Image (cartoon, rainbow, N blue to C red; front, top):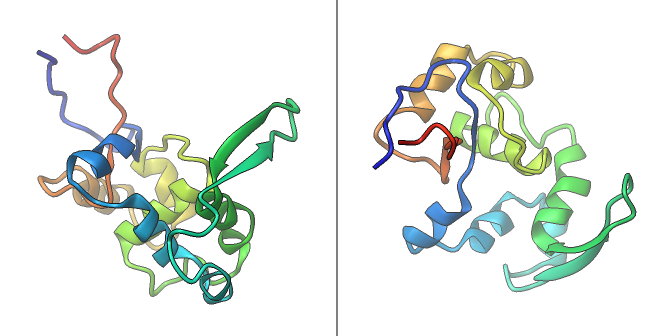
Length: 145
């Protein structure tokens, strides 16, 4: 049984994909909802572009990635209104993780990206009893009891 450690403003968070499955939720439906209007017109449902081949520009390695996620990363997240002052905080954090390939970030790091939100506000939102959009602290398996 792992020891629970209370998150702080330097605790790394990420999207826990297993959470979506455990909760019986469809991540692809939610990804589709995050597409810009132009891409939603192209992908009329979450069923489009399920897996595509992607070539890592740094390594040349070819891997299969979710087509909706790829579209979000390479097109929608680059638009100026992808995250704006009207985007709810949990959606904004989720979109940051979509755009950065789910690289873990702390509330302090997120506050630098999401100007107008303090690390403490982000921490209170993400570290509460409610899990939003699968955003959870990164579990360090080496430190778990």
